[in-house]
Length: 118
Length: 114
Image (cartoon, rainbow over all chains, first blue to last red; front, side):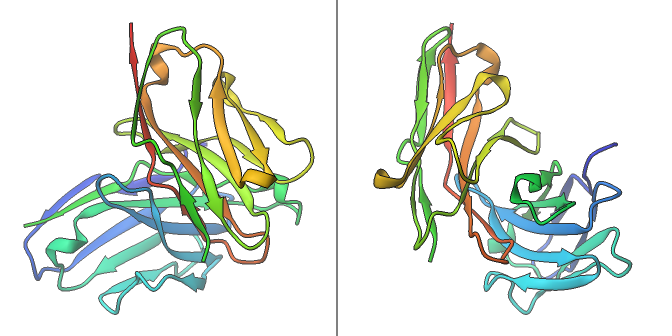
C-alpha cells in the first residue's frame, strides 16, 4: 500500500495557461475526492467520484474546472485559462466503504499539488 | 449550511503541557465529526472520528476528543504534548446523509516550545 499519490507536487504556470493534475488513489479504493486549500484556510471540497461516476460537485468548481476518472482508478483535475485566484494546494483523497457502517469511513489524503499562477 | 469554527488560529504550548484545541460546528443534526493533522509537506492524517455512542473518543498519537451536543463542540485534547505534535490541526464535519462532502474548519497551528 503506497498511499494516495499526486503528480506533480508543484506547478508554476502563467495566467491563462491550462494545467492538469493527476491523482492515483489507494488501489482498492472506489471513492475519490478533490479538495482545494488556500493559505490559512482548511481544505474546501470540490468534487467526488464513486468509481467513474462524478456524484457531487461543489459550486467552487467553475466552468474552467473539470475532473475525470475514466476507468474508476486514477483521476485528473484540469483547470483551463488559469487565474491568479486559482493558486492553491489541490488535495486528493480516496476511501473504500466496505459496508454501510460509517465506522469504516475514512478519507486518506495525498500530499497535494501546489499550484502557483503568475 | 454546515460550518466549522476553530476560534484559535495559533496556539503555543510548552512540551509536556496539556493541550486543548477548540472546535464548534453548526449543523441541523449531529454530523459525523473528525480531527485531522497536517504537517508541513505532508498530507492530512486522520487523528480520530466520532459517529455515535461514547462521547469521549480516543485517537492516534495519544489524542482524544469529547463531543458535547449541548455546546455543538468537539474539542481535541492531549494530556502531554511532544515536540513532534507541532503541526496544523483541522476539525471537520460530514453529514449523516448520502453526501460525501467534508467541511473543514480553518485550522489551528500548534507551536511547541521546549
